[in-house]
Structure formats: structure tokens, C-alpha cells
Amino acid sequence: MAARKNFEVIIIGGSYAGLSAALALGRSLKKVLIIDGGVRCNHQTPHAHNFITQDGVEPGVIAARARKDVLAYNTVNLIDDLAVAGEANEEGFIITTKSGAVYQAKKLICASGIKDMMPDIKGFSDCWGISVVHCPYCHGYELRNQKTAIMANGEKAFHLATLVHNLTDDLMIITGGVADFSQDQVASLDSKNIKIIEAELSEIAHENGHVKHAVLKDGQKLAVNAIYAAVPFTQNSDIALTLGCELTESGLLKVNGFQATNVKGIYACGDNTAMMRSIASAVYTGNLAGAMVNKALTFRE
Ligand SMILES: Cc1cc2nc3c(=O)[nH]c(=O)nc-3n(C[C@H](O)[C@H](O)[C@H](O)COP(=O)(O)OP(=O)(O)OC[C@H]3O[C@@H](n4cnc5c(N)ncnc54)[C@H](O)[C@@H]3O)c2cc1C
Picture (cartoon, protein in one colour):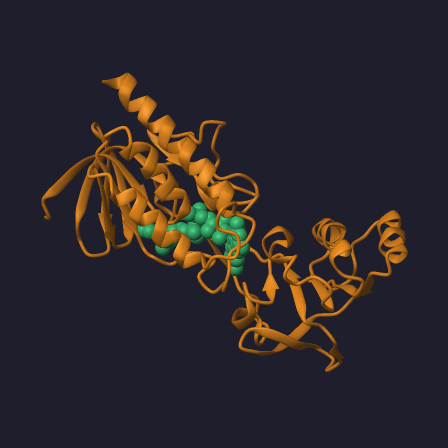
């Protein structure tokens, strides 16, 4: 069995949330290990927006700057590896990595993000984060005035349409089946000239991730250049779950106002806990988790 290395805190996931937590802990001289798999959910997006001071910067550049900032604190360590198993013991938590290393820490922060599940539509995943997007705040401004489709149904579609309609006059909702709107919602969509198409997409034709047009299952071509899609997701890592952490109904890790999960000593931050997915939100919740873990360790001492 590999020799166990000891830390005060292990952070699983070294993107915006995990690095932000590490920054708060490093500045308090806590001995931290970040384990990072290196695949951010926004890795295919050319430019990140809506994060103050970094608007329009490549997501990888923001992450690299954050790594540099954090690793300037010499109590913070980072390894490029995957955490694959977790176990609780009397001193805290043992984490094993894919490469076979074993680490012990008093506290655990799960900042491992979520995985978007790509639908079985030709071209969809190639366009994800480029011209097929999840969030009007992140990409709506750049996609303004485009021929736009919302790929969703019911409340989700109506909510997105409400946010997007002032960015374009050419908006349609592709429901993927029988439309699920109230009479009031239909009237409201109609008054804004938003078309409802009760059909499924079979293909998104594109050039380097930029939508050229969309094709319905019956072969009909739609003139569309931008698509908003609400896709299902799963947690990237099940370590928190195997250690007893609970999920919300929507599949996020359940945390209180201080980013603590229901399991003592385990905190979570970033996309794996948040409905509002953004770099700003990941940085905020990571920073809060770092401060709360520091407080818990300091009180214990
Ligand atoms: C396509 C797309 C475009 C986006 N564009 C924007 C934008 O323009 N502006 C904006 O503000 N937000 C944007 N977002 C949202 C933003 O990217 C996320 O909110 C943010 O990345 C969440 O940060 P995070 O640290 O929680 O997770 P992530 O950035 O997803 O990082 C999770 C990290 O954990 C690691 N990890 C996972 N499992 C393990 C494991 N078992 N062991 C070790 N490491 C592990 C991963 O490798 C990864 O490095 C976008 C999201 C998507 C999907």
C-alpha cells in the first residue's frame, strides 16, 4: 500500500471554485492539496464573459492565472491526477487517486464540477459552448441579433425565452415534443412573435462549431445561427456521495449557507452545488468554502 501523505485540507477539483477555496486557505497558511483532473466544463468555449476584469478572456487563461496566483503560497500543493475513491477515518478523510497515491486530510472540499450530457443530435457537442450555449449572461450579448432557437420545453423554455427575447427579434422554441405551456404563456410568446415548433432536432449543421442551420427529424431545415439548450447533467465525481453527502432534487450537492454538506468535515462549492453556473459564482462559493474550512480548522486547534 502507498505511503499516505498528510494535509489539513484536500480539494478535489482545481478549476475556478477549487482554486478560489485554496487561495483563502493558502493565505491562512493551511496545508492544502488540490487534486485536479484538468477538464473544465467550459473547455470548448473560446471566450468567457460576464466575469469582471476578465470579460472576453479565454477560459483556460483565467484558470492558468488562478493556478499561478494560488501556487505562489507555499503551503498549497497541486497534483494533476484524478481522485477516484474516498474513505472516512478518525482523522478525517483518505483520498486515493487514479495514479495510486493516497492522501489524508482533516477536511475535504469537493469542487469537482458537473458533466453536461450531450443529446444524441449530430453536431450538437461540436457546437457546445461556441454557438450552442446554456446561458444568456455568458454568451447572449455575442449571439445578439442572430436567428436563435431555444431547445427546451415548459417552464425552462419560457424562462429562457423571457431572458433572450430582447437580444433578438428572430426567436423560436423547439420543444422536442408536445408543447407544455399554459395558455397565458402561449399568449405571451405569441405577443413577442416567438414561434413554437413541436418537433425534435436531428442535426445541427455547423462550421467549426458555428451553427449554419438546424435540421428537424422530418428533414425540415431551420434557418438558425444560435441555440440555447438546457441539457441534463451528472456529478463529475461520486466521492462525496459515497461518503454520505446528499443531493438536491435537481442532482446538486446539498450545502448550507456556508457551503457545508450534511457530512461533518465535507464542504462543496462551484457548479456541483449551484443552479447559477458562472465563473463568478464558482469563485464566490469557493472563496466562502475556503474561509469556512479555515474557520473550522482554526476553532479545532
Ligand atoms: C460551455 C460552457 C460555457 C461557459 N461559459 C461561461 C462564461 O462565458 N462565463 C461564465 O462566467 N461562466 C461560463 N460557464 C460556466 C462556468 O464555466 C462554470 O460555472 C465554472 O467552470 C464552474 O467552475 P467549477 O470550478 O465549479 O467547475 P469546472 O470549471 O467544471 O471544473 C471542475 C474541475 O474539477 C476537476 N475534476 C472533476 N472530477 C475530478 C476528480 N475526480 N478528481 C480530480 N479533479 C476532478 C475537473 O477536471 C475540472 O478541472 C460556462 C459553462 C459551460 C458549460
